[in-house]
Structure formats: C-alpha cells, structure tokens
Length: 284
Image (tube, rainbow, N blue to C red; front, top):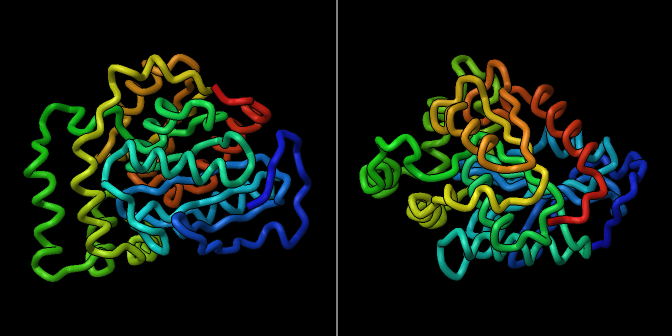
C-alpha cells in the first residue's frame, strides 16, 4: 500500500484504470494516483467491490485514490472473526491505516453506510469525511420490521438451494427504481458473494442502531438517498442529516436503493462536489 497526502494530484492515464488488489485479509479494487487523497468505498449487503465502477472512474479523474473493498467474507476477502459491526469497523480501520494515509474519506452504501457510521464512532481519527448513501440510523427504523421475520425472508431461499448469484436479478430489481437500466451491473456485484458470507451479513444487520450517538459524529457528512428508495427511504436519510452536526442532505431524483449505479452522474456530482469542500480535512 502507498502513502497519500492532502494535496491534489493530477492523475496520469494509467492511474485511471481500475486495478484489483487481492491482498488479505481485505481485497479491494482501486483507481487513481498513489499520491491522491484516499477515498474508500464500502458496499452494501448485496454488493462487492465491482459495484462502484462509476465512482472509481469519477474519483480517480478528480485526483483521488479511490479504493472499493470486498467486505470481510465477501469476494476475495477473508471472513471476519465474528459478524458484528464492531468487527467490520475494525477491519475497515486497519485497511485504511495500511494505505499510510492516517484517515480517509469514507463512503458507505446501505449496509456499507452502517459500517461507515460505526467506523466514524469507534475510530473517528480514521475518517476525514463521511458519505452515507441509502442507509439507516437503525435497523427497523420505521418500527414495523421484525428482525426474525426479516432474516427468515432473506435466508429461506439460501436454505432451499439458491445462491446470491441466482437471487441477484430478482432481489436487486425489487429495490431499485422501476425500469432501472443498472440491474445487471448491480447483479454482477452480488454474484461474487458466497452463501455463508451472505448469511453472516444478514444476521448482523439487525444489531445496527446508532441513533443515540449520531450527535457524536464530528466528521463533515453528506447524506445521499434515492428519491424512490423503499428500503431506506428519504425519511431515514433526513433523520441522519438532522442528527449529525456537520451534515448536508442530497436526494437523487429517479433513483432507488442503489443510487450510485442507478443515477451515477448525479451521485458523482454530489460526491465529488462534497469531497472538494472536505479535501484536506485531518479527521475528527
């Protein structure tokens, strides 16, 4: 891994080509100049490192070193010692420290946003800024979701012989905006998940609840949500933006739950514009 600094670095043509780093315990895909300010991208329950291609391209073109991980247990990464948000946040902190950057701009989508929240609270010096996309302050935030019922609905097909790859198109199509053209790209990312890791992540998610600590987040924060997100709707995002002190709210028109792939141009405009204002932040 290579050190980064807070200065803008003009990328060369070869910096713009995404490259895979199959190191352990965390494997990732990156793009951008080695001296660029570090941006890490944390995918959701049904994602993996290849679910951030539009953001890797946009961030590397802007001079950032962008790195999208395979969450522990996913893709080429080693499973976590235990499926908990504390363990996942610790893995993210160790991964970031390995770049020599000290801290990173942390972008999390859905479950990745939950990991990002725990990271910002448990390891604040690792977080220069925070981008929370299509995520929630707590599992069952609307008060109508039973944890066991939610888990059973997602694991019953696995027990019946399905795999994340075989489920991907149907699952993702149901949570993205109607007639989204990005379902195939999202499904390719989900196809890299093994059944055991999927089960571990599903069982982990109901433990997420940071509502009582949101005011403790010191990093500048961007909260992004798709207009048509039914999984973690705009009301959840507004709660995050209202409760986190240094935050702003952006709603992506026409997008559902996978807003970074459904409306990449709008998502990237919001992301790169926010990071430009946060560039050089030293962390909380």
